Amino acid sequence: MALPKKTIIRDLEIAEVREPGFDPVVGERVWIALRVRSASTQRVASDVEVTFNAGQSPVNVITDGEGWAFFVYEAEQARDVEVIATLLSVEGEPGTAPSHSFRFKSLAASGWEGAMIQLNDEVSGIWGVPTLFPRITQAHTIRLVVDDPGSPLLGREICLGLKGNSSPEVLGITTQPALGESRILTAEGLIWHCNGTFGGAYNLQLEASRLLKQSPLNAISLGPVPPAGLPADTVFRAGEQ
Image (tube, rainbow, N blue to C red; front, top):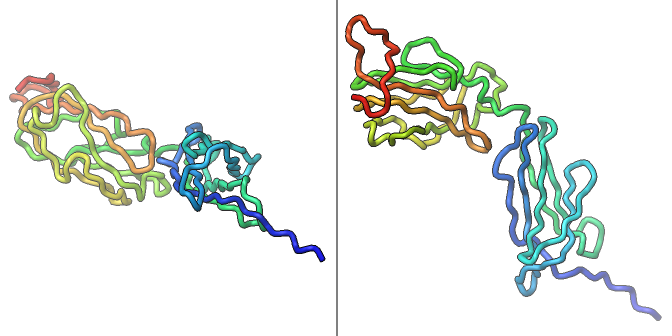
């Protein structure tokens, strides 16, 4: 009497995954990856076939010498994305092959085009368009707000940065919260309380969690209060005091 045939499962498992580093906007590409190893020896497994299924035609990838299989996803439309990676080199009962689901979003736009900047109580403008003119020794506020309730910026962590020929220390600029400190953007917007000691020109830029592109640069000219008769938008070049 013949013995029943045993089901053989190759000794493989998913050791590590690399989730997408950002939510791609339509036209952007993002990499995902997983690493395969032997479950018993814990050694990486090369030449293993992995299939990545993003809801279209599956793509088969062979692991490299370090056990990694890489897949690039290009966003074609805004949607919730799921890419399922499965080890095809495992034989056994249906559905038992090790797999991992990568879940993220693809976006129609980054949202920066709808971001607004406001200095103190002045009229707000599109971030990156108006040059702002805060005054030395006068505390001022920078406010970020978005009017679109569906903006992809809402709910993300936002931080403020400074770019220019001079550092914040050279310009004597301090902010509260500090530059680089992230907070979640809500419909109420975000406010930074700022001070500057020395005159100079620089740019403000925003960064959002899980977005590849940063905001446009917004020009700032920090200078003393203009003497009577001079326009408030007198530009002070970097290094002038």
